[in-house]
Length: 158
Ligand code: SF4
Ligand code: SF4
Ligand code: SF4
Image 1 (cartoon, helix red, strand yellow):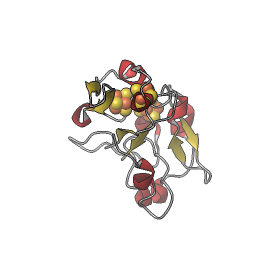
Image 2 (cartoon, protein in one colour; image 1 turned 60 degrees about the horizontal axis):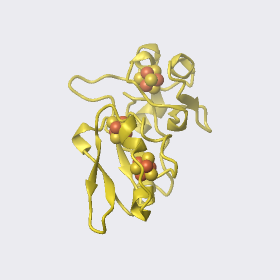
Image 3 (cartoon, helix red, strand yellow; image 1 turned 120 degrees about the vertical axis):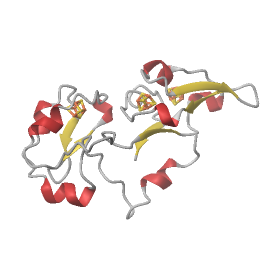
């Protein structure tokens, strides 16, 4: 857990970058290639893609998780989403903030129960609390833990 993930959110230029679809090129290259055709957005079976303020696709984890089905990758006609050999779809990971209910003594296991990767474990800590801990290597950044957290304590960051 980290105390201030907003610091990481705002590291680049004062505001967070939109979460592009998996396999997206680095931001500047992505913007240069993407034609805003909406093919990825309209075909995503999970319905988690939406246009950002400029019309480029972004992931909204409040709408659901990414299954890495690859539909967006296959639908992109512009080469803005590119699968590289041996590379994961993205390098995003969950970050759990200290606003987690368990920090204040209210038991919650919701995010861990949603994680198919078993990337969130609960460890006893001083004071008798049991706190969530991310197994970073196991997390694939799918976002299944994001929307279920009752206090919005989770972010999915690159
Ligand atoms: S990989 Fe599948 S679920 Fe994930 S954003 Fe692309 S189309 Fe949607
Ligand atoms: S982002 Fe996905 S894999 Fe990572 S902790 Fe959340 S549910 Fe598990
Ligand atoms: S769902 Fe939210 S409040 Fe519950 S354990 Fe996970 S981070 Fe904490």
